[in-house]
Length: 187
Image 1 (tube, helix red, strand yellow):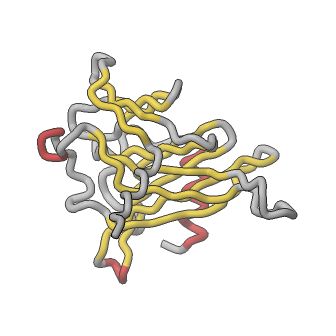
Image 2: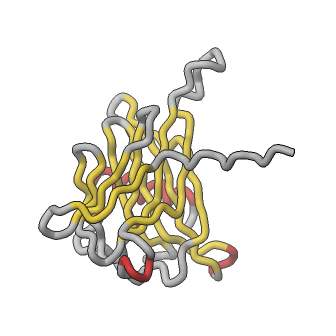
Image 3: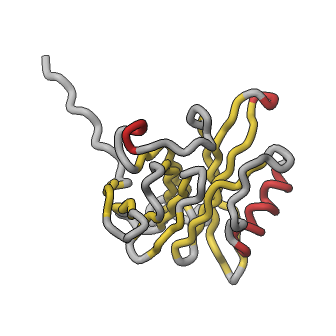
């Protein structure tokens, strides 16, 4: 799929949301996985074939809304997990939520001075089969049958997300802040 087609599909998903039920087959090499909005920032993630159609990739494109229009500000891609559309149990995954990808893009790149950058961050998560919804602050995100969830934020501090069961009980929490760098051994 050409970039302009992907861009148009992302704008449609931002406007209309994910189809219900979530698609489980590729349409022209593109399978939408997740959409999240937090005020004037958003992310759309999708599964796409890379490397000449032999390697599945998961891409996340971030957007900033200005004057009512969604403007693409960046994107990131990474390898898809094995069997990317198969939902796993928490026993197989080792927990209820896994972060497998992140991205960060400056949203005010047109500023005159180098300081004062405002960032849009996104995380790509995989939820176990027991997770029905993911809570990010006050937002509740339904987990599609494939288990992939996209989360976006424009705040400086990364959110803590909660994996919720069907009954609303908290199964797991995951801090989306980057892990601190390991301490160096002193000689």
